[in-house]
Length: 128
Image (cartoon, rainbow, N blue to C red):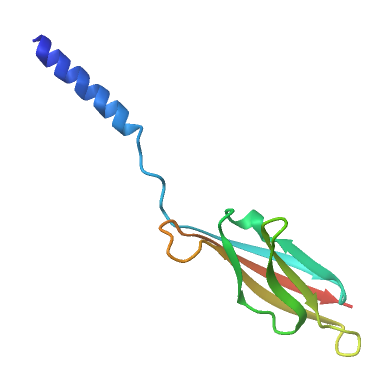
């Protein structure tokens, strides 16, 4: 009888220990974010992309703006962050307003088991 209680006790202990050792959550996590931004024609827009991903994520442009002076993603070595920078090409000689759409992606490098991704759509409205 003592042997049975010992086996049951050890079995319960093993179950408790192993139930607390779970695998890391490896599911894919995808987010979609939309930003609506109003600018004047010569105004520079800069977005810190680190708030939308992990420290090891990379950023890229999925859909480029149609008409711009600057629309690029750059990695800043001093801060170790990705930034998106945009400047409109609108000037008072061509139009009074326009709308631009840019889609950015912040994601894990290729080949990782855990894949999270944030899709950021920026709707720019540029008014004279």
